Figure 1 (tube, rainbow, N blue to C red):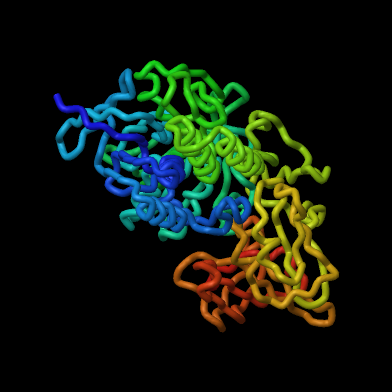
Figure 2: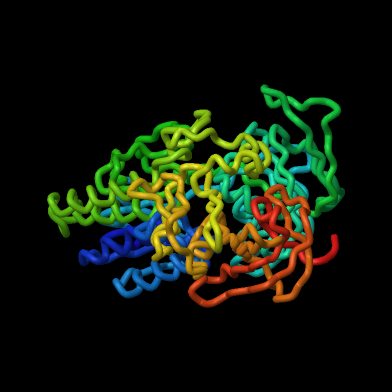
Length: 527
């Protein structure tokens, strides 16, 4: 049987695989990427939200746009991307079998990079096989790739970043999210993600999980119940919701089967069963590398850096780069990757109970339990200030690696400093010009422009808004607080959506003066 030869085989056209392919091709290596999907880019094309991090990490850029950039660069570098190509096996001497258009091809590479990503975990409960029980990734695929609503009324199981981000996207697609449920005692994802959901009125049920999905041939309802410290149901705590969809976001497992098949050394970690490799992705078998979620679950930003590191290591392995050149590039990327692995959600802090920020400020307990910072807690954070005239109020209360707000403001109204995980500070002595760039640039939608004058009986609040249809000037409705409860009547006075805001509209509402510290969302109508 004929065996095809490739210089470098990359399995997986996601952020790690494409990044590695680009760096390797830039050094003159002939690269072929195989991906089982009809469209390359992995999870990036499902991600319509803006990325965290700094400029070098693609901060404030939406995931699908990053995917477009990677594909364009890969094409320009001459990378061959083969789609609908399922790699079925990986064997000794760097040989793979791949199904392409119902034909099995045997391909041998001088080097192989495995960047197969991860698969969604599932929770077993009564009725979990009913149509209408889907993974969060499947919901993203339906909404953001195929423009199909997963359902009308949805319950989300899981409050990690995936559960929080997908819940917001469900709202954007016109679905009603009835609740977010998690067996853990605290919300697992970024507080800013939880807060933008809470202020729309969605309740969180921590220390709860699904007891039963109801329905005969499809989901018609769901019952949840509280669990004790041993995750056993507490009788009498059941709560029922009428839903047609249950979305499950309970973590991911690395797809390392190909590496294990080939005899690569493996290790069991908190992030799953993964290949035992060094920082460049080099495994126990010479010439076989791994990068991205297959080596441990992290954000797409980290996967892209890991892919680039593997690309340089492969270039050295194949003789296209000296060790000194590779080491210099690796040191630079190490620093960039390390910056993303700092803060409260750093890998080193997994499983730990963090009670204070890096600035020694008590973490909001209400945020961890209910998804929003309580009114009597918010003033302790450095982004919350009072000032005559207009000024930014920054409700970012956790140490996460992100700083685009600092560079977005050219008037020095926001300061983070050199440490990317520091809490943003609203600089009281600065002069805000109401450009709105900080509000539009914040990936967590945690910045508001507040205009207050003590001699007036009203104030103006400008907030990020990513729902359609947009409110219109003159619309009357209600201002909602951080908890999603209606506070007072509100009138829309300005709506801005220039191209520079990248689809984050800025909506300004007029509220009574004594609500300027609480009002954070707008709902049209009398209800």
